[in-house]
Image (tube, rainbow, N blue to C red; front, side, top):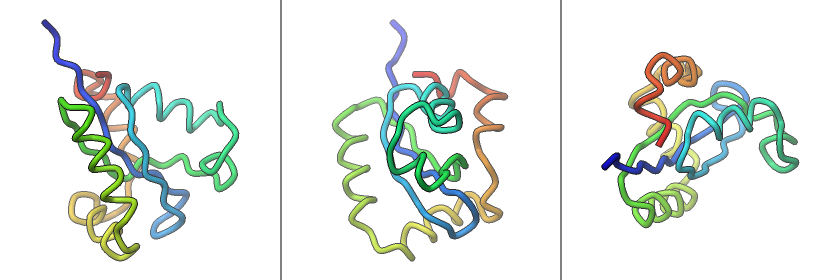
Length: 105
């Protein structure tokens, strides 16, 4: 049986720019939706298309709890979290497209 994964992710429009935190069960599909502007809303309004951070879990409740936790953090804490694994604020979408098994759920 294939494991089901859930992802908490952070998008931005530029280094230290506007941040958006979301959760999904298919990271590739969801980031493509953000990049193409499929849905009206916050990410489309602020042009948030750059994936700068994500975490993977096997439990939907853990993902939802983590999303809520991160949304409650001070901005500086979120920036430190991003920079702990992505110092240059690179778009991680390129990385996950190279290895889609890690992010397709």
